[in-house]
Image 1 (cartoon, rainbow, N blue to C red):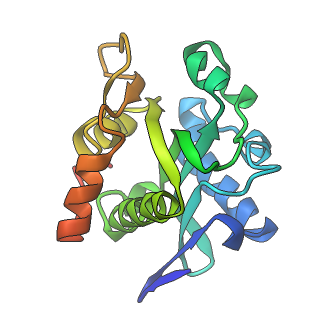
Image 2: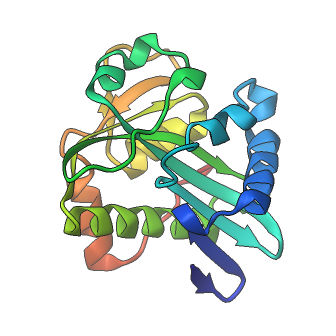
Length: 198
């Protein structure tokens, strides 16, 4: 757990059943009106392997989270043909891994705030920790289902469209360098400027 005066950051195995309930409440608040809330199906992605969840808490509420899945080669190659509820994390492996940035959900009143910065810093730390243990990022992909996701994946992480995207930029993205440039910038500066709306 990372503590920042007002906010606390939790990852992976630190997230218990109570926090999962709060995480799903946050997901519903952020994504339901767009028709993308997964509810329990999101938790099911992590039934076996818990790695890949980063949560920011304010008081006793989850106010934002990122989650990453470790995909099999078969899932990665058929990514655009799978439904989100069919995805399952296979967990980290020594050697090459397919990282899939699955969800970014941040409560409206916390967008453009320290919460986004904390999530991004923790994602970089989390990726670096895995790579130090021999869990290499062989691919880093994600799907933007809302305009804020497009801004995060393309403007912040520097990801590129993977095939066609719609006029709003919604669609699948990949990182040509597996987030190396972004991670290097964050490691050097330690700071992150949140683009408007993210």
